[in-house]
Image 1: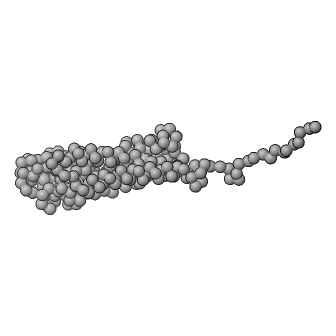
Image 2: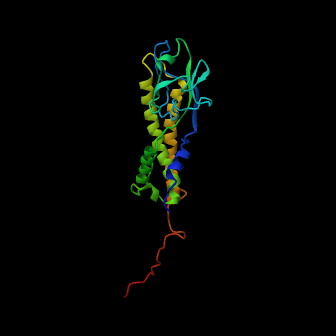
Image 3: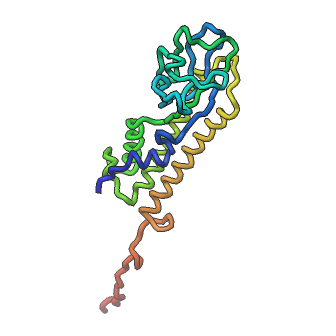
Amino acid sequence: MSWTTALTDLRLLLNDGPTDKIRAFKRVFGTVDGANAVFKTLEFRRITDFTTVDETGPLGIYINGEKFGPIALPLTYDDPGSGYFKFDLLSIPIAGAVVEATYYIQYFLDPELQVFLRLAQNWLGFGDDYSAIPQGLRPAALQYAAAEGYQKLAIKFSSHLSETYRLEDMPDVKQMALLSEFKQAADTARQQAQQLRNEYYSRQGQSLSPLFGVYSPAIKDVPPRR
């Protein structure tokens, strides 16, 4: 039976649904001097568009702790993929204001998850069609795909930090710890994938053998003729 839920299963394993990861009242990057209009959220793949959020809901931009929506605080630009957004010139935060934002993020797009699953399919030796992975090997495939995801996330997050922070800035200790956790998660998932694959093909890690042992034919000892 075709594995039609592969993407959903992998996203569930990675805890990467559209409302799984919220960032509440996070400080944004940008000089708050009353003149700068361009700001940026730290995370990439922000899926909350600040130009369309409900003004009465919790998502959106906060200045000095107060919520402002697209109407009260117009934006001329918002790119959730990169995190950048730009205020209308008449709505630029005053000097010294605290600019924060609450939003959802998502680590991976569907095409990326499909690449991870195809890599898992190749690792298992079944070609590129991950939907054909046997049911018994799907847990191993998911773990391998997750390992690829966490590994890419660690690389992407490291690059993102270096691009976001200026040389004189000191990266937050928690952010660096998160980078280490991504790397560890990749190693753990890869080990789990190998274990699950071995368990599928073997019993207690040993090569699969016939249930009643190997057949050894009895050869009658015939004495030589005189």
